[in-house]
Image 1: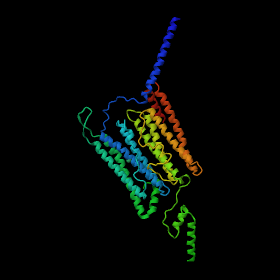
Image 2: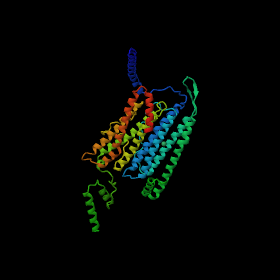
Image 3: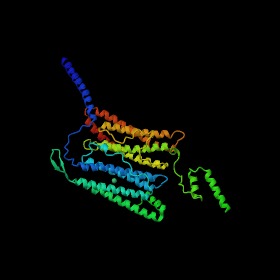
Image 4: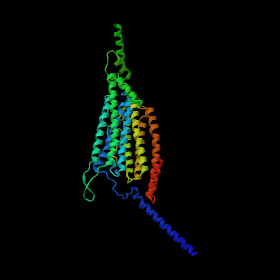
Length: 234
Length: 227
Ligand SMILES: [Fe+2]
């Protein structure tokens, strides 16, 4: 009987201690667990150099400026008094494509171990480069100029990312950086490819439209717009 | 000759008697022999969109969706980095971003359908200017970011209600705008708000447990599979 009482007392005491313990640990864990704990991981694999990273971050904003510019073009041609639904459709699609380009660059930076901080500065209130256009041809011309400037930026970026330079490393010694072969390959093989194809497409459209307008004026633009709307190749 | 003169007289009297700001009268004056070069006053503007202030509200609401799509995208990007490494959160916020972006294009199409135009510059002095934060602050932990996502959705819900309220009064009454806002926004807002609130409360309970990091891991897995 005594044995039983002692056993019960021990169990009770154990329970109390455990109870108090879990309340304490609850308190203790509640505060720090709001912040995610950073684990110590080696950083040798994060090899993108700062000038190159900076260019890539900048390119995200550039893609969003292009995206907003196309969005404004879409908004212009969608107006009832302008009434060019084919042009509007094409430009709205381009706006979403440019947004996808920005997301693709973000994805690349994430893959290379970047964007653990300063993510909030990546998109800085991008605004469209124009709001009204005198004609469909005028907008196509502006789109082509815009794409050419984006292409130039990507080429410049590839140049920066392949350039090796001397820098002081973490141990205070001079060190020669490496050509970022993978990023440059990705930029030239993937991004530039899309740029050149896109530019050729725009230039072809502009040329056809100009020829149609020369002989048929307003009718030329009207017909061209309907072709764009129905997704026919022009 | 007399007859011609008479016809011209009749037409000009007809034109003058009609207010010159209607589409039909502007067509009349363009087509009349006096050969007016005035632009046509023909557009698809009617109902609530006759009111400049209401159009500004819808423009502002569109800008708001664009900004929110950026905000959600940055939140998603953050959780995609190797340190945070929360694929479920990344996916959830990305979906919210995509949705806000699609909605902003849809709103532009709606504005232009109703004879309006889109304005991208910052719009001032509208009542809706509640949340035009342009520098994005975003939370770097799971619970905080979920609470932020909930807050942003509630902002969008409030914006929809503000427009809805304005077009229900007698002078601006516009059932088409009302139905557009209802079908494309308000019902979806109630769904997403309920979902995000549920997530936020789940998260709060989970991180209060003894093993918060395992709980967060499992919750992230859950998000990844359900979103
Ligand atoms: Fe692009």
